[in-house]
Length: 239
Ligand code: ZN
Ligand code: FE
Image (cartoon, rainbow, N blue to C red; front, side, top):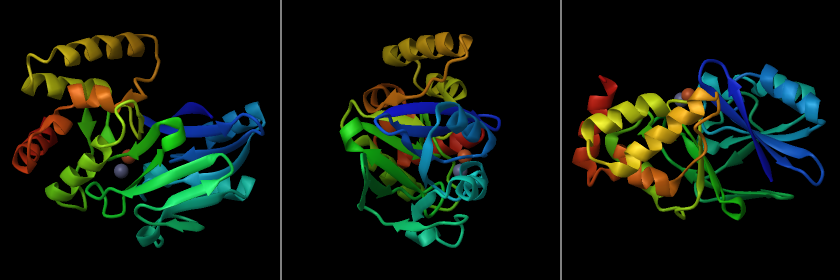
């Protein structure tokens, strides 16, 4: 399975998962259609499925056009069926969805939105976390409670430590400044910040991260309890 990282809009990432034996592919969170169509045409790809982590425009903006052009099927959370454009396949918490080599377990991870899900591909050790877990940060709480967000992050935290994390935005550098402000002597974080800066200098995404790295560096995953987490989330909102 090949993963292509596609920059969209200002700072969004969409991901194209390509089965290189037959060029069948899924796209995760197509923010807009153009950059995805460009890559599909260049590589002669069959876009079979569109996977949405949540209903926000910068994650579903390409749905309608891609579906029309490639007859792809759109997969999203059952309870968000009325706000994910053109949804076809409704999935639920803890369900495993399989098609050919695409096998993904769905986790319901509310907090950023009430219907947010992530897609975990155990065979390929990767998880697509949308706007719930970012590298060195987490999403803003728009529709849920602090407790929901805290529990959702805990679900992701418990995946195998070598799982690669593909999130919805390139916020890593800005997030790192917050982590460093509130955790000054974290050597792993210092090392990660150095690596992030090297990548960004070369215009390379800082994604994917890994569970192991986030456990060592991401202050939101390091919060001991709900109270600490909630305080950090408030501080970050005004950072
Ligand atoms: Zn969002
Ligand atoms: Fe977003």
